[in-house]
Amino acid sequence: MISVCTLAHGRDAHLRNLVRGLNESRLPPGELIVAVLQDQPYDLPYTVFPVRQIMLQSEGLCLSAARNRAAAEAGGGLIVFLDVDCIPHPDLLHDYAAAAPCCAGVMMGEVSYLPSHAPLQTLDYAVLDRLSVRHSERPGPPSTPVAPCRDYRCFWSLNFAMEAALFHQLGGFDENYRGYGGEDTDFGRTCAEQGVNLFWLRGAKAYHQYHPHHMPPVHHLDSVIRNAEYFRSKWGQPTMQHWLRAFRLMGLAEPGPAGWRRIRPTREDDLALTRQQQHQPFASSAKVLALLENGAEKAVA
Image (cartoon, rainbow, N blue to C red; front, top):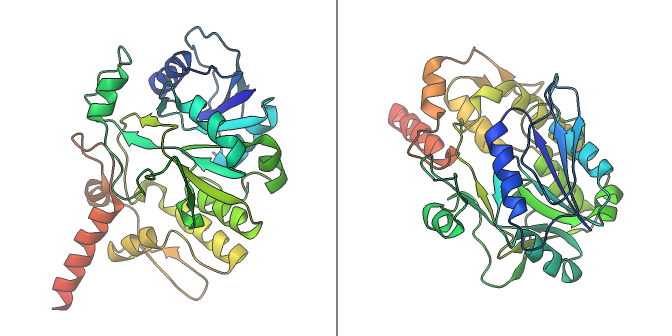
């Protein structure tokens, strides 16, 4: 049996579309587990498979703990984790199930980003394929059905699958990461340290639904700094360095003897610089960082 796990806080329409997508699945899931990070359960569409909503505390958001709880409740031998913003392609579960026997490790499927005007009243996957784009800062799908991922930093929890027993053997996600940032890279590092392979799949596709976002995530600056410092204390190496460099160039944070620290409040101009525009299917840290670095070079010159 395949268990699909997601976590949700708000995003009612996005979650309903995820469920609608699972209803179209070529291989139906055995169940859907929703870790609910709000006070009220969701009103979801009818499904041909059971749905369980696990009510969790909405205060002190901990994505790691929510994923771990959803996985603990799952009864399937194969767990597929989908972000609440994802609409699964009808072949997503079939592709994961087909690849699982030859992929002893973590499998990561494709993700395409939808623009704000994508029509979702009816899920026409040919239209979604035509409108969606690959994230320019993420590796593309492999040329072969399955390919190894040799850099643990590329692990991405948006759309992945693995045997339930292996997830529990690894200990799940580290719950010391609170708020936003770092837990994905930590999970990838744990896999690398324990000799668990990561694989890219061509297929197992999900469509990421549009929502406004900030990159670099200045709206989560404090938790990014805290989690980056925790990662460094655990592994002896830093992480999320591109975000930290952007924060430094913006004059928001700086490193010191005791680690990174915020040096001023976030202002509207910081939010404006990093805000995803409506015409953009995804926010880009690379574009913002390039602007900041170009400005820094001009100031030096």
